[in-house]
Amino acid sequence: MSVELVKIEKKLGEFRLRDFNLRVERGETLGVVGGSGSGKTTVFKILLRLLRPDRGSYFLDGRDAMALSRRAFSRRVQGVFQNASRALDPRKTVDFLLREPYLIHRDLEPRVEELLREVSLPPEILRSYPPQLSGGQQQRVVLARALALEPDYLVADEPTSALDPTVQVQILKLLKKIQARRNMGLVFISHDINQVLYMSQGLLVMLSGLIMESGGVEEVLKKPSPYTLHLLNPRPSREREGGACPFYGLCPLAGPKCQKEIPPLRSLGEGHLVRCHYM
Amino acid sequence: MLIVKELSIKTSAFHIIRQVSFKINQGRVKVLLGESGAGKSTLGLFLSGVLKPGLSWEGEVFYHGEKINPLGEDWRGRTAGLILQDPYSSFDPRQRILSALVEPLMVHLSLSRGEAEDRALYWLRQVEFPLEKRWRFPHELSGGLLQRAAVAAALILEPGVLIADEPTSALDPPLRAGIRELIKKFSHKRHVLYITHFVEDALFFGEDYLVLYGGLVMEEGPRLRHPYSKLLMTSVVKPGKELPEVTGFSPHPSSLPPGCPFRPRCGEASDRCYELPPLKKAGENLVRCWNVR
Ligand SMILES: Nc1ncnc2c1ncn2[C@@H]1O[C@H](COP(=O)(O)OP(=O)(O)OP(=O)(O)O)[C@@H](O)[C@H]1O
Ligand code: SF4
Ligand SMILES: [Mg+2]
Image (cartoon, rainbow over all chains, first blue to last red; front, side, top):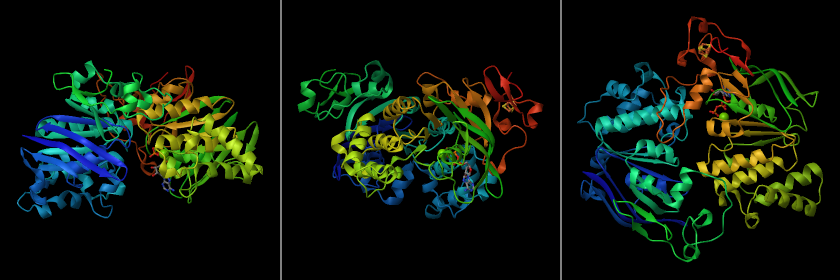
């Protein structure tokens, strides 16, 4: 039981997502981390079928995910977007917003009160409109909507980055609890490696449309690649020009090879993959 | 020195900022810390010379001993520079970076084009902006680089006051570190108000804090001692660290709870807290709390 992307390629203007592979089992969380422009949201959109890859395959529990009907797909995979205030129609009440998913899926019994409890919102909130809610409350409504159809997999793109750190803490804990309780597979996407490490068992690090490193969190932390180390310990430093390896500009290990060739993704054992010539 | 005395900013219905007083010494960075809705941007924008429509203000502002009106001429841009959270909103999208820097020099300082360009190039070098990209349009630059250019734009008329409203919130952590180093570098001889909700940023400057909650100053000084400040300090996600129990959320200024506004979320609250505590001396700080001495 897993969601799997295999050898995905996608070109968007100058940006290219290259040889992208990802796998998350039900009951586990995979964290995807990378700076702005690394391709995180492109991966999010592909996983939600909002974007069609140029090449490669998408499997849901071993079957072709692209072949599923829109309706069947939305019962299996749901997304949580970064900007809650834009994801919610400001003219609709919370009650309507939480019932909306059931208008299309009439075979499911609406469970609005249960959803509210699950995301720790008080029942009074049902009569409110999104602009009357705080950022954290709005994000909880977005999460409740995504949970309404009881998906097996959830994909969350920067679900906390528009929120105050105090509220980020609340949302992270909540998401982690719900993922475990519902035994969902979760793809948690963020630019903050610390959040990703808190949430996930597996880690995938991206830069310029390339996977720079992937593996179990423990394996990666034992022997992180130079780019992951940079994310763990950000220091301002001056960038070098050029280079074939996308981290050439700031890499302390960079050598002549990194200038000429993109390093291949190679295995260090135990499922740990790194893209680096000199590690 | 920049002195703000009993500043209130309000709509016709409620106060956004309530009788806020503080000082910024020359060469210092005052870190304004607080959550969404605390009134940080309203205060910061006002001190840089902008008041949103529908708002009014009262109170006093002194700069180098002289009473001034921040909304008056010659304050905004000339005496006070502003850096915004979203670097793309700091620039005209149709103007190239170098032109955006050159124009105010020609308009305000009546420099010739040549002189203005020299001065602009000097500032681009100061913020470590790669000069070969000076002809780009804003959308052709990454957020991190454009924020560097925005720092140059805020400083190019050499203002003595610099307001930075969450200048790192839209950036990822490695870029964040670069921008705050840059602002520290330029704090020398200036009066800097650095607005943030990131505790790492606050601790980086780490010398002089102003903590705002519900439009009220909760504490001011070289330490973070208020129960609210402690909540902010523990709300940091780090490997191997337990996350704190965070209840409730920052209130909207139109519906503040009576008494201490932090009471519904405070782990140290007692019966007295239904009454608003005064801002009083506690060690080196001024603290608004019945239970901090
Ligand atoms: N013109 C206005 N009319 C009514 N309410 C306003 C107005 N301007 C601001 N507010 C309210 O005042 C509060 C403080 O606003 P402000 O933007 O200063 O907060 P902030 O601390 O900068 O928050 P953030 O972290 O979200 O930027 C907010 O709740 C906002 O909705
Ligand atoms: S006054 Fe009371 S409620 Fe307010 S911060 Fe202090 S202890 Fe907490
Ligand atoms: Mg603000």
